[in-house]
Image 1 (cartoon, one colour):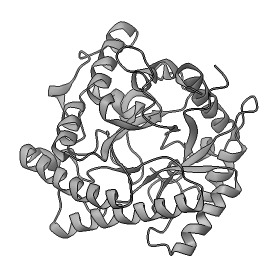
Image 2 (spheres, one colour; image 1 turned 90 degrees about the vertical axis):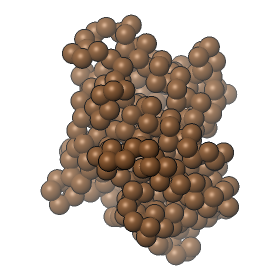
Image 3 (cartoon, helix red, strand yellow; image 1 turned 30 degrees about the horizontal axis):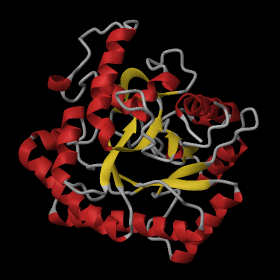
Image 4 (tube, helix red, strand yellow; image 1 turned 135 degrees about the vertical axis):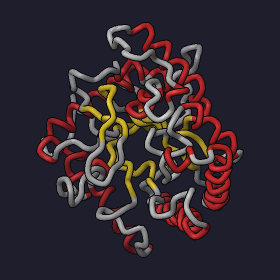
Length: 342
């Protein structure tokens, strides 16, 4: 139904940063990302909000409270809400030193502080704080058992801090992060944390790669040399992964993937995000979102109040076209028509 009010539809700020940098293309400013998000419109429907990465050059994580309020006003001035916030934890890898782990927790605390002020300011009614292990699969693989324990210990400390702010943390499942590089490793990490305020952030692009076992061949689901026209086998694989991770899922990214890994700029090899209209995309995006938004019986879970588009590492000339964002919005609207509620 077109009049579904939920889930709210968000764009993301970080595609203006991720994969950009000195060895790639210049970042796109937060002002420009907000402008293009606010201008997007399909049949009178617009984005409800934006999820924000709290990192340079868009945001100074050490901003004063007045600066945070000014940011809230800026977003609200575009008619947008703020949803999930990405904590800039990469300077404090969980598999680094004790000081690194203290930095990790401190960055989560700062992100929670932003969230608190946004809530008090009236621009944030939902969303979580996004984290990852900030460590590579190679580092994790040196001692899987103890490294999973170390990631879990750090996440627990971050959860305890987040609980003081009434925030939930969502660990992003992405093959470039140790301890979350495969669907089985991700479940083991979440189980090891054992805190009520941690969950999973599913990104359709990244979780598709779980089926291919790039960084965990032992957890591969689809056969080698998989024929992508075999939709039945693909659907069975998607069901396996979503059945395992859906109970943990508290944040959701709609995305497309062509079945390959990709990396540009400072970002490691990761899921190949494709445009919503990419003919090489392997997912039936609107349909396959239902594996995450509905339970095993096909009933809506309503586990989160908004969904967010995530597409990173597109060329700037693509991202500067308003049609790109209109196409993305149209895809999100289809997801809500199929799997939304009022």
